[in-house]
Length: 294
Image (cartoon, rainbow, N blue to C red; front, top):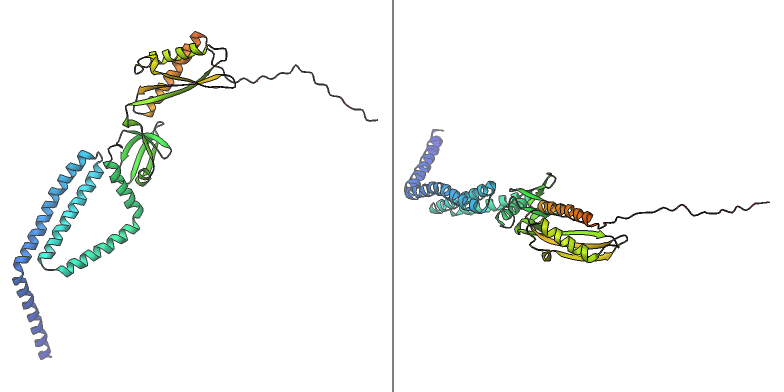
């Protein structure tokens, strides 16, 4: 028993001395690896702040700049870790770490495919100059003001103050109409006048009314006016003009004001805007002959 204990103790002592000698022999590399890893942490903090400032100048969403800065920080620390392992000649551990990271990344990617897709789409949308918070857009059958673009959702406020929340992926994969990219919008107005009306006078009166109502319309020549059809009870026309507007609400307000002023002008000029009338006539005498059955 004593001999076995002595042998085991001797083996343990030899192992400890071997490790100690290995540590002493690799002490410079160990110190250098520790210094590189610690330096990577400090560099990561500086890189995170720098990337955050650069991204915040291009993106209004703080969440996006925060995530991008964190990703840059993680990448910097990972590079420092790989360099430190390389200094220690732990190539096998480095290879195993990369393989494990790949497997974990694949598993996470498959399980969070939808979430990651929305996150990537949110980052892409945040960097697009033609979609910004405050713009009036129309997409996926909804129209409203862009309230927020975060990492998962695209938030829209409609004209009736309802909030619509879209997944970012849905916005990125579907067409979007942005009314705020241009400072001018065209208002289209359809109406009809009675068959007894003087059509030349109606056209001139409509153009002059639009030109007086809106400062953006410099003269009646800037108003488009086209008669479109002989309707069932009226001769219909299409009137179009341009206004300075960046949202659909401003366009609707302009159209409302145009209708009000045109109605006033027609009433003063005696122009009739007819509406369908159904006449029921009861003066016909109908005779019903009843045959007598004998």
